[in-house]
Image 1 (cartoon, helix red, strand yellow):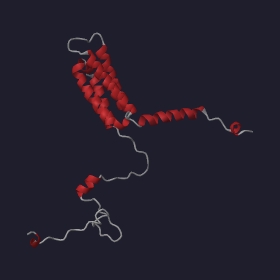
Image 2 (cartoon, one colour):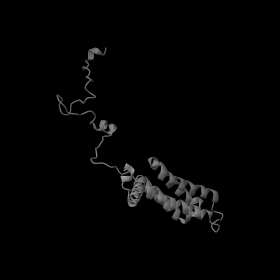
Image 3 (cartoon, helix red, strand yellow):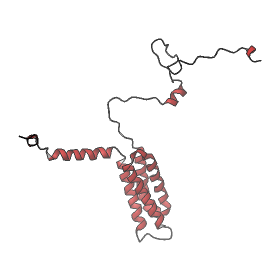
Image 4 (cartoon, helix red, strand yellow):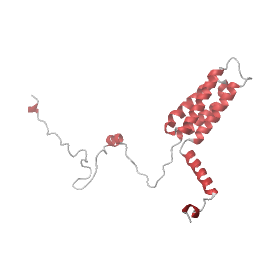
Length: 181
């Protein structure tokens, strides 16, 4: 009998579970909730800007539509380019605030609040790090400022002595006044 005839067919529920797991992993790997809230706020500002009963002397329709489109673009970029989330989230908050003056109080304040809240949630999101032990890596500039740069102990070294980066540096001999002149 052929090998493919002996293989058991995979159950359907496993493939559905794989799809659900892949979707869940995709949502968790980006600021999904912040983008969703920002999309809601941008959509609300867009609908208020385009509604025929709102157009008055204080509402500028094209600018309101552009601002709503900018918020929606930032929200979609949050979903599909999460590495630059701080830039897109800040832009979404600033666009939501600018909608206050251009699209009838930012879509009756609801669109502005949703856009700013979505940007804030997206800005605060950090990716979850998988793995066991977390290793604290010192920031090089701060370790030099605090005086911890290169201070290691090892065979033949005193605690607090020069580290491997200072081993080749020798102090200059002290100067006496006869050398000056």
